[in-house]
Structure formats: C-alpha cells, structure tokens
Image (cartoon, rainbow, N blue to C red):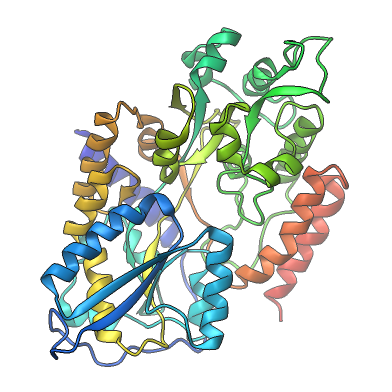
Length: 460
C-alpha cells in the first residue's frame, strides 16, 4: 500500500470513528441566500472582497491563490489582511459587532460553533449543493468537521499534527542521538527517557547540564524544552500531546457537554510540566510569554521545541542553527497528536456573499491546494496538495516525516475538541493554567474547580 493511500485511509478511519459520535445543533444559525452559480461577478463593476488570515507564513501562498483567482475573475478583487493570532480574533469579534468584519476569514474549529450559534457565519451548504462541490476530494472526513445539523460553515484548507523540533548542535553537544529522541518514552510520574533527555539537554551558564549536582536552575543558558505557553483550554502544541498519551481526552465526543480537566491523568501531566519549569529544565512561562516559544527556540535558547506542522516554514526561515523534526515521545497509551484543520468562512454581514462564495470555493479548490503545497508551508486538505508540500519540503532539505508518520500511525491522532462555549471555556482555563505553570497553585487544587465551572456552562 503506497503512502498516499495509507494517509487517506488512516485519516478517514480516525476521523470517521470520532465523527460517528457527532450530534447536536447550534441555535440561531444564519442561512445563506440563494446560491449564484456564476463563476464570477456578473456586472462590470469590480467587487472587493476582504479576506483575513492569521498565519504570516501562509500569506505568500494565499496571495498567489488570490492573484490566480483575480486573473480568472477580473470583476472580483481579493484583499488579504494578516494579523497575529491574538489581534486576529479580537479584531474579528470587534468587527462583527461594529459591522467591519471581513467578507471571508480563516476560521478555527474552536471558534466556529460559537460564531455559528450567534448567526455570524453564512451557511454555505446551499452554495455547495448548487455548484456541485465534491466534498470527497478532501482528505478523510475533514469536510464534515465544518458541518453541523445539515448546515456547513467552511471548506477545508489544510490539516496539521505536532512533532518535536530539535537543535542539531545542542543534540551533538550533549551526545544525544536522533534515535534516542525518536524512541523516547514519557509518563507523568517519572517523565521517562524524554524527561531525562530534557534534563540532559539543559545547560547552565557554567556548562553544567540538568543531571549534574552542580546545575544552577537560576542561570540557565539553554533549556532542554521550550513550549509555547500555558496552552489555554486546548494546549494543542503545549501539553495535549503529553496528556493524550496517557489515554486522557479533553472530551469524550465531538460537541460533548462535559470536559475532563479534573481527570487525574490530566492533572498529573500539567503538574509534571509545572515541576519541570520550576527545576529549570523547561523554559519558564514568564520567559516564554515575553519571548514567544518559537522565537526563543530559533534564537538558540532551547534544545527541543514542540510545535505544529504549520510552523515548518517558520523554522526553515528563521532558525539560526541546523534543525530537524523528531517523533513525539511515546506515552503509556502511545504517541498522540491533536489533528486539526482550518477552513474559510463567510461573515453574514458581507454585502457580496456570491463573490465571497466564489473566493471560498477557489481557496478550497485543487488548484489553490496545489499552489499552497508548492510553497511548502502547510499540508493542504487535498492529497495532490500534500504530495506537492512533501516535495517542496524535500527540496528545502526538510524531512517532515515526523508529522506525516504521526498522521499515518493507527490511533496516532485525536480531533480538536469541538464544543459550544469555547470563549467562556478559554476564559476560565487560561488564568488557571498560567497560575499552575507559574507555580502559584498546584494542579490538583485548581483544575477540578475549573472543570466544574466549565461543565456548569452546559447546564445553563
């Protein structure tokens, strides 16, 4: 069985198992107007569509898609606006209230149920049916992640998994081999060989590593591991890959009405991270918050860094040393990565819904997927785009198999936890997770109370 078929089958199987439990419907969702099956604006007047995205690494690829789209549709102009993650969502929510939101925007699985419930997303299912869009071209059941109760709020753009980025020079200096790293084990009680590697790769200003009795945690020159922060309620790159390797999951099914942040396996995982920060082996939260996780790693302040496949280009462009990607550590229940995918949605406030749909359809087309793949920044949602992305990464000398093998591994992925109340859940969990990682409170005391508050949201 070749790699292409294996990837498709693995993702189909993993997603279909979880989606089979999907149910429920959001109230107050908006309906699309009648679909215009025309391929472009019909008048001579040029209509401008504003398109927002947050990932700067993807901006050149989608600008090329927009240029190609505009050449074929001269009556539609697409203006791209990119902003960082935090500003992006703040500006989007503010814009929806003020009536200045973009016509089309890149959406996230954590966000769309709430937008849909508030009637802020156009149901594009009528357009999909009118134009005969073939949803089977998307890998696995990615398209179904964006559908709920017969309505649809986006067409898939890409997918991602998590891996460990390593600084080759740091590994060489510590005598750590890639084989050791790829075969590392982890559990929240002992930390396994992964925890030992992190300590071994941590070096203080006197040259002592974290295993030395002379190691000074107050004067660390190189941290063994850098994560991106406290992870709010989802921890995609920060801790989900560790907690899930114990068998823990955020929720038991998509659109669940109960979270599991009070589970002993999750509590032990987060306390392990907090303890490793206190020991000086993982970059402290204060420093990560100030510097940014990937920026700190790229500047040589850490030996290992957990991050997603969408960041491959960031490391290729900005790392100041030879680097590579290694497999996640193997926990008690195996290696586990969150499997996430983005899509473009149309704001119900747009004055140009037909033109917006034409752009959404093109941005999720094979042509655009192939274009994005050729840029080698993410794995597109269509197989031909994935093939081009792998070829582009290889041409840059990058082995990205740590990401693709994680996707191929039976049971190696779990879906982003999609539920209602995402913003309220984030508001509850963010300060709690930060307090734990700052050492201000222990996980066993804080997480059960936070979980009770979250689960109460679903009882209102």
